[in-house]
Image (cartoon, rainbow, N blue to C red):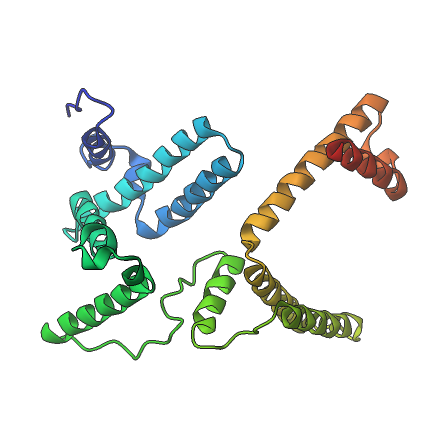
Length: 280
């Protein structure tokens, strides 16, 4: 199979993917994949894009965006093989959606006024849902079960991100604490409940997990009230831990020591040194 000479073209990537999935001379690994087996890679590549952004590394970002784009092309190729849709349908769908949801940019002059923008996105999404339901009924298909306000929050999202989205949905109908101090009070209440479960004998791991989950949920709510992304916050702390732990390893190496030669007090001292160095 001849490939397009212009490797900067999306058509070249589509052609490469088609050949990888071609039963006649394609890649055995790529041919074995399906939507379910590729999904974890799609999620991983999205996280790696975020990681490159948070490291302010534009070279890596370019590469990671390419890897994420490959995931889109991979899924579209598999769908095309099933005659469900192809990459062009994906592009058409998102272009039309962006135009439809931005009438203040692409619409008439009245739609472009500042007052028309507020709340418009959610209103258009609701209209789209109604039109999908109408099309389903017109096609003679059974109507889906009544939707919950929370149904469009994907269950595959990371836990803290999903928690924030669920809380935002609930807040829209007034189910929310009006003051951040009330969220902190709730967090303290949940901490007490966890402490009681931890000290209870015999320990019930299921109940401890339940209480710990409640704490994380309230933590996500507190982050939302403070205008902080909890996933970004924990990733930032993870990076900080990596740096400081790496410095401990360097200090031990300089002294010619191993971890098993140090007690916790000694490691804590090195941690404090690493922290002090970083802050200064």
